[in-house]
Image (cartoon, rainbow, N blue to C red; front, side, top):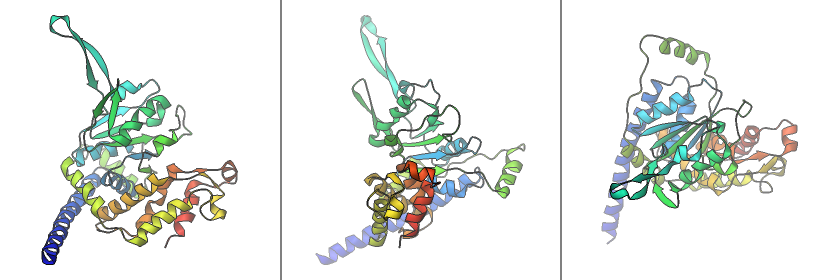
Length: 336
């Protein structure tokens, strides 16, 4: 009996190793394919890939013109996903995203309702400039992002799998923007800040995107391969030290639980979903980086994008010039 168990365990480890080897090859190919189109945003590309490999949704924040939309469009092609785009505007309605029922008249004059699916029925939904729509329309994504189905006129409609939302957001200081509700922000695995490229990257952009031949994205994996990688991420081992680091970080970011000198600046902090997101994201980051087990360094690297949109500072802290990034950096520095 013991020998049989040993053989089964060895076979399982061998199967996982083979799956992991194929996954590492696919991830490497995907990074190369994205890098051929998107220049100088290595950290952003890594964080978006981590988000998708972990099975989550991502919020890309940055000023217009930083290739946020082009990145999402490229990801749909590279990862072999059925991608659709919705341009969020102030007059956009929930039915424009989810779909609606229309009345049709059939043979014999019989009338019946038929559900016409909206663009949300895709494997990758690009919610472009999500914060330009009203809060009512933004909230139309809440159920789909958490439960992977929508309810219209009392009927449930399941979404395709995999299903991911990659939303782009303009800084709130710009005209015509609405802040996203906290409940919706919490559904995004990461907030990915897209910054200006460095000089070398911007030079490459100038040369390679203004000539006769523009680089085009190519497919590097299929949707089925992506789902296989997502299942593998959930099977990767996580050491006790990493689990403790995740708990220490998330709990220390809540008012009244962490170091008083830091938490006095925090109005409200992350809930258990933040810890779940960190657990998955650290595994996915290890895989994207070519490793099969996460480390505390992964927790530190992901602390800001995972926690930033799940916290708020007190009015006094903002008046003193404190920032959420600065608070998270101090909390992450205490790990290990």
